[in-house]
Amino acid sequence: MRIVTRTDEMIRASRDLSRAGQAVGFVPTMGFLHEGHTSLMDLLRPRCHTLVVSIFVNPLQFGPNEDLDRYPRDPEGDAARCQAHGTDLLFMPTDFYPPDFRTHVRVDHVTRHLCGASRPGHFEGVATVVARLFGVVGPRLAAFGEKDWQQLTVIRRMVDDLAMDIQIVPGPTVREPDGLALSSRNKYLSPQDRIRALSLSRALRAMQASPLADVEALKRSVLPLLEVDALHYLEVVGDQDLEPLSTLDRPARALVAARVGTTRLIDNMALAPRA
Ligand code: AMP
Image (cartoon, rainbow, N blue to C red; front, side, top):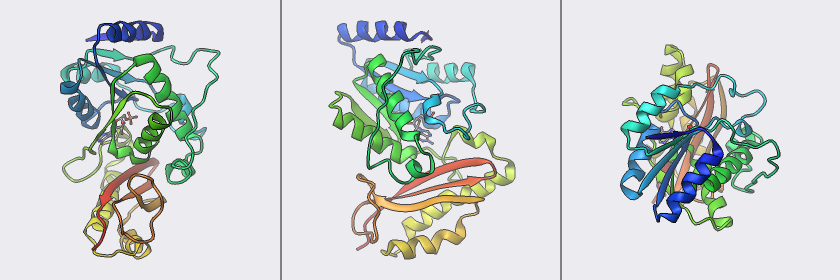
């Protein structure tokens, strides 16, 4: 596995691969890799010639009071995981945004609520870094986790709107055996918080199992299950357009975001239309 830390070297490598007709599969990450990330590598490995993983903690997508400075890092463990999952090239840039970088990508509408409301500027940071990564890495395929459902929607919208010739491959959420969605941020949870964090997936599963079609009643019925310190949102939206639903009359997604202790967690699950 080759490790590249300079952006111009990555650009040269991707141009060489494309001239040689090699299809690049790409998994962008912020590192501290777990099985959620490696599942995306496994998903793309059989579908591409060259598998590129990036690790870059993107300052643009963190708000002023968020955890950029304490975001967990483990470059050696990450490299070993990438290698074990068939990565050909690991891109860990130290010079990603040049000093005269001036372009920002803003995706409207699907970013106005959910995490877009509780984290102003977050999705502009995400769309901007992913657009530049796509330009630098030149992938044919790129994998994103369903764990970040709104992010996946934003990336799909951007790729469609900007006619980028990249196939977006979604990967199902990888969970601990007890249901907790894997996240690099889980490491911040104390043992007691770890138990309360389970209430997110429990509430979402209860929504899946409920016969209620009325969304307000459905949400009310699971609120008591949420053992969190602050609920940022619990919403039911159309699974592709993220439009808020009042009745479960089409394929939907239930999404939750909450703070447990000092850690902000998100999760989501599919909801089938009620008969
Ligand atoms: P991050 O490093 O948190 O920016 O995540 C990088 C990619 O891994 C994103 O596409 C995430 O959606 C995906 N991802 C993170 N956690 C999980 C998980 N538990 N299951 C599946 N994909 C995940």
